[in-house]
Image 1 (cartoon, rainbow, N blue to C red):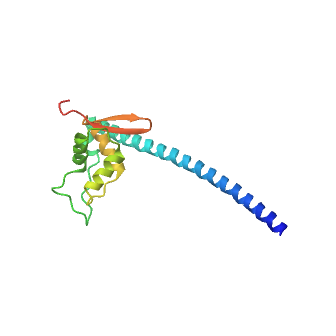
Image 2: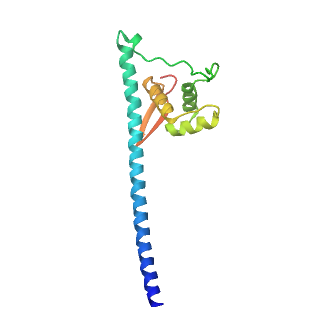
Image 3: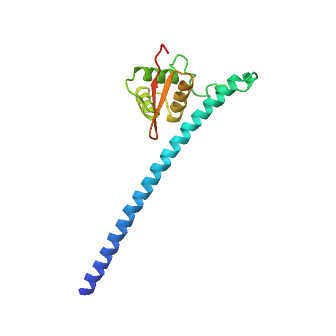
Length: 156
């Protein structure tokens, strides 16, 4: 029996050490995922800004008529959405009605809930919000690594 007790004690100690290492590794991976998520959000934001700049530069060039990408026609099997409010209009309406600044993910969640017949993606909402900022129809504020949007006053 004394051998079994020593063996049990050794295994218990080993398992306890392994659990501590596992918890520490989980925390390390969580913090790395959070860092990478913040980095991805920043890159996506920068991408939207760069797209806006590219569009603005192309719109200002004399031969821009053939170089500005056009929206693709509706894909086969999908409705054209005729008569539907555009996503940009939905976003603008939400910002106008909202009393507090909203993040792209908040806007996406609310619009997805209100319009369950649509597949609304955060990246598309973020790009649309950046386009509204570029047109002066929305304002962007940054708090830490988070970006929030508000509607501009209609008079301005």
